[in-house]
Amino acid sequence: MNPRRLTGLTGLFLVLILALPGCATAPSPDGELVLVAGASGRAGRYVIQRLKEQGIPLRAMTRSRADAGQRLGADFAGVDWVECDVRDPAQVAVAMAGVGRVISVIGANTVGDDNSAEFVDYGGVRNLVAAARREQVQHFVLLTAIGVTDPAHPFNKATKGALGWRLKGEDYLRASGLTYTIVRPGGLVNEPAGQKGLRLEQGDNWRPLLRSTLSRDDLALVLIESLSQPGARNVTFELVNDPSLAPGAWRQRFATLTPDPN
Ligand SMILES: NC(=O)c1ccc[n+]([C@@H]2O[C@H](COP(=O)([O-])OP(=O)(O)OC[C@H]3O[C@@H](n4cnc5c(N)ncnc54)[C@H](OP(=O)(O)O)[C@@H]3O)[C@@H](O)[C@H]2O)c1
Image (cartoon, rainbow, N blue to C red):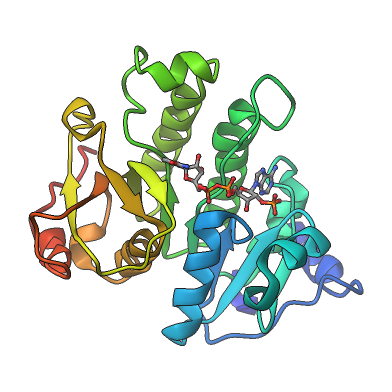
């Protein structure tokens, strides 16, 4: 952690917490470390694989190391894991200490309980963004979903408004003053990257993209690329695979994206 960032009681609090057994975090070059929130999920697994492959230092978040280890098997090894429930601001502060960049692929997968979209996709994202601001994080990449702006989307009905809570999380990030990228994928599938082209759209016109899917592996590459592409700064876009486009051409598409209004 950069000691210049620590001020007053907040700094003292973090120093004391990081000194506790089990809270130690691996050192990394200043500003490089990527916190992957949701690293133990189906998309998160690809994100950590690709970050490792690219030699980018990462800290992976899960609520339970034991559960994540069981789910991820070999992908769990050799990664710095932090246990953190995004609903708890104190745990999020510890997870965020020393972080330079964030990729969040968290998501609620239950409806109507205390870990549903309201508390994870909105409350949890709010806690992550607030902690990222305090840590002066350079770039925050947030995964949400296609169709979040449409209250009439059928998924919204089925999930008692989960998309609406995701939109609130997006809005909180857009208003935060942080540099950000918001990626709204179509239906996710476990396919290798690079098999098909990728379509990046803006405006959340989801109906024509309804039957499109997206490889979680391609998604991971786009999320990571967003950290370094100038055209990905302060933009929101939808993302699906499109076999009519050349694989790899998507990197040039960043330069033509329209930044969100301030
Ligand atoms: N499936 C689709 O077709 C689709 C389409 C569009 C968008 N999306 C969105 O894409 C994202 C990733 O999808 P996925 O398939 O990878 O989801 P997933 O496998 O269900 O992973 C969800 C992740 O969220 C984490 N999480 C949940 N509650 C948490 C909490 N309270 N604190 C900390 N972490 C928490 C889980 O971590 P632990 O359980 O280890 O704590 C897990 O890593 C989700 O937001 C999903 O809604 C999915």
